[in-house]
Amino acid sequence: MKLIHGLAPIILGVSAASVAADAPSLQVEEQVVIAAPADKVWGKVRNFNDLGAWHPAAQRTEIVEGSNNAAGAVRVITLPDGGTIKEKLLSYDDAGKTFKYMILEGVLPVSSYESVVAVKSEGANQTKVVWRGEFKRKDTSANPAAGATDEDATKTMTAVYRGGLDNLKKISE
Image (cartoon, rainbow, N blue to C red; front, side):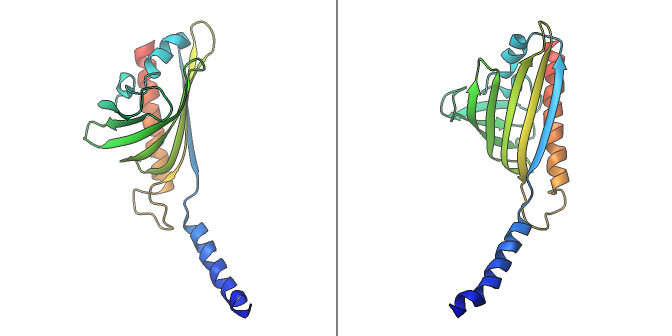
């Protein structure tokens, strides 16, 4: 029993250090309002196997596991510089015009990443698209390297979302 009491501060100290080193959960949400019917906008967004149909940074998208638009499908997105991002579709609701996915691996400075894309009608000829993600920085150590901070991860994901949503608006209106 003395041994357990003697180890308690050490165990608690290690646990506290582990928690302190763990990166916080971060969130980004970007939206765009598009002067077009929701069905038209969803028609561009809905194909999990073709992110390039609306996002300019996706040079190629390929389903490597499962079936397109079915939960469990895994896609690999190739970027213009040759970098890749591997993502898994977690849920897909065609009628509700929404899907949820996670990043399995890739060049983005994030980890534990999950995101939802939702297309919502706001009238006969107006649609709101919301892209929301939760993640941690990729380098979850207590002292992340330059370029790998919470701010860097948040700025990168904001730019990814804005680039896609702005282009979606451009090609949909």
